[in-house]
Length: 255
Length: 255
DNA sequence: CGTGAGTTTGAGTGCGCTCAAGCTTAGTGG
DNA sequence: CCACTAAGCTTGAGCGCACTCAAACTCACG
Picture 1: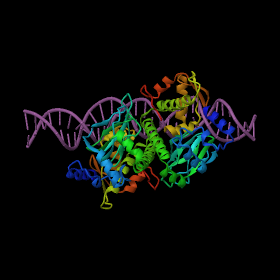
Picture 2 (picture 1 turned 120 degrees about the vertical axis):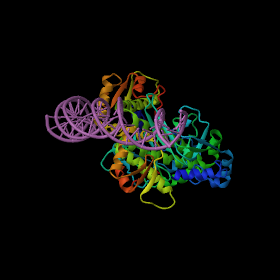
Picture 3 (picture 1 turned 135 degrees about the horizontal axis):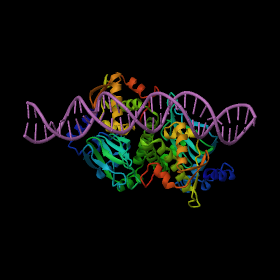
Picture 4 (picture 1 turned 120 degrees about the horizontal axis):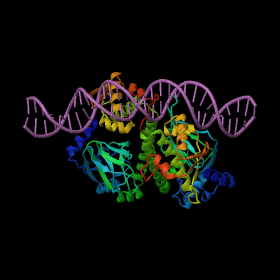
């Protein structure tokens, strides 16, 4: 919902907004700490690219020729074993950063999960800029530390939570990320765009699609969520959902 | 084995080696990129502290008054749910960094897993230094990116590997980390110090201690490893162990 | 020896997986 | 406009891996 709104705004500007000042992720992306002079430099280096759902962006082992910020849509970091078992290891939403300065080849597969717009920079020039521009490297350090914390929260989920808790955790995360971006305060019940397929959820949570489907049905029957269609739900009571997720009262998932 | 040797070296110097130039982790820790002038500054800020196995270093929620480098021994990052379920989310070995500049309270429990020596810096002065010393912030960024990659490898293990593969992965990781530090080339079979308890392994792998014990026994019966005692093993064929871990030929776990 | 922590092994259970069928929805062409 | 198709989702039946509960074993230490 929110997502779609952002895309519409972007399209209204003509897909290639040249002005970083108008960028919807200006204050949260890797450029967040930049001053206008530094922004000008980035402006000259950047180029936009859009992807369709399912498009590969990078395969593990590929040379990494660029780094990028997600402007709209969602991308997925994942890893696959020889026999096909797949684990998602990152869900990249608007303002998140793709790529690893200082590494020549990708360690993970990166795939567009939805229609996706990236703001891309060639890797080598970006790395040079990183060395001379503390406001970028400091921001990247902060973002990386945040992602590391997120990854560690996720490890608790993968290692110790039940299937029901895993689903509740994911749905709570999506609900929280979408309510905090919503400008017009809290509506009850909160509408949430699930945004990814059951298969993607299964890959994220270390489950099968059947178990994902069963647990969503169970949460629906127990009144924790309401489904409007298979990709959209209402959350009548976020506290209840968080409780099902197995968090102690303070919550504290992600960021 | 290697670990113990490093401790002995350190003790021989008198537990408090004041000279960073002699530090065993000088070239791999957060200070790795520092020049001698910068090292002098750090030298004036640092203080050593030792912990006994099991000692708590930080609890989640505590104010973080210091950051630190592991000099010798091992520390463990973990998270516990209300009902007692515990997941290890980081294993900190010599040269690894503890703490999160920019955050006032700890997100995870930190515990000494063995006898442990830390090189500590008060957080606020360290953060100031970080802002003015690119060689430290760049090193910290690189280390954090490496840790993020490790955490993501670990997520594949937690989400998709079988108990047997989990054990083989952990044992292979320990074997690799200890052979690559060993100066005198490859001996066959490779002796490996397991170094942590069955309980710690279980917390690491998202299993119970019984399952850990059973899978170790199974790997022993199948000739993949030999146990000398419950904390030490021999690895006759590292390639076989890696194969059991479910890696495609290139391996590539951690760092 | 006796004690206790750590580890191993056994028996039985249940959660999440596999295999399989049916349902829903959107897109396509007659 | 309505079959037809295919992809995504849901539901059911049965199984097996890892968990729980329980007991025995090992070894360091007093």
